[in-house]
Length: 475
Image 1 (cartoon, one colour):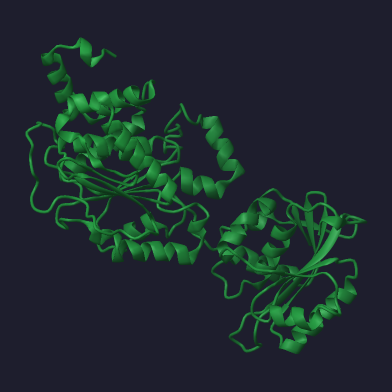
Image 2 (image 1 turned 120 degrees about the horizontal axis):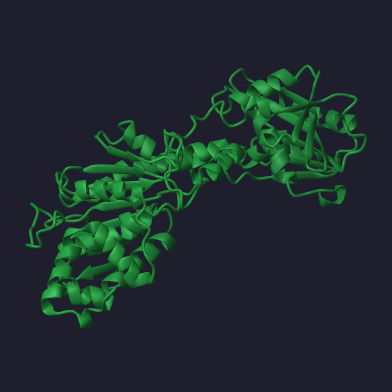
């Protein structure tokens, strides 16, 4: 790549014009300038560029791009796109939103660094950044354009995206000339947060209540959402199902295409994609295929369960323990009380006993006492520290040793997903002929659309608390 100092004035002018009019050329040129290596303009990124051109030209007002992680979306659709738009129109205003403060600061800093690059400044002298407005997450051009970068859950104050009024042309000749900026949302939530109903619905509500209102021109300023799919009711699913009351254009790019070829062979070969699919079908369906499985019946699959009988059960376990999910009352509408007994041998968990029914407080207390008498080798007794759990613990702590209160920090669904690899790998064994095992499997495989989930709660707590414990003394 020739240096600007080696070019004539005419060549410099031609280069600047080419950069302003050709977004893909701009991306390749400044990626090389900033990082010293070629930008891999893979075929799928041509589609991304084309979709963004439709946004700046006014053809698309609301755009969703669903594509796998690490496939170039942030580099092209956030960093390079913002800088290209500002080079064309230094008055453009952008709000950039992502899942964490650190991530939005990194993206904002990358945009600012590109625009402070000597080559960029020489080519686009009208797009300099103000000396007194260079904060990592909020900076302005000398023409009062700029970027405000903010995490999903943070307040957006004193800044709007887009330009009030009609498009203001600067005469660059680019399709982007006159484009006033946008709200760009890139991966708005963490993978684990997507499993929380509360976190998901909070973000979806926040889009309508706060994010969408931060446009300076509601009739013109676009909103772009770029993300991998994490849940059928994540922000993309919410918007595509009409959650905002608007029509959204969708660019959906699965890693494994319909014709059986990989979307991005340089990143994942067909063999690697099939390996990933076999290893974790749920993650692959959402994050890589952009088709998240509908929850309820897809978290614990029936074929994952293994069974034991008197001939195959281990003679000795490395450890044995109980897991209890208590409730407040025994009315017809209340949850069941569930206690499970487990034995662990090597990498395998064996469900030895299970009680699950509605109980009064006294019945709950007596049930735990009876289980301890029946299974005297259970050293640890994990009790969920909510509902009647604290009262049971207080009433039995001087009678039963090894009672350990457990306070859940994630949603029920998140806790279930955290232990699914243990089931999927065939490391959970159930008693083949136990009278309660059919109801247990039915509840597990219907979660989280079944009326009760107490056996699920007891199970996930048991496995999560002992996942990295291998002996009696580790409990």
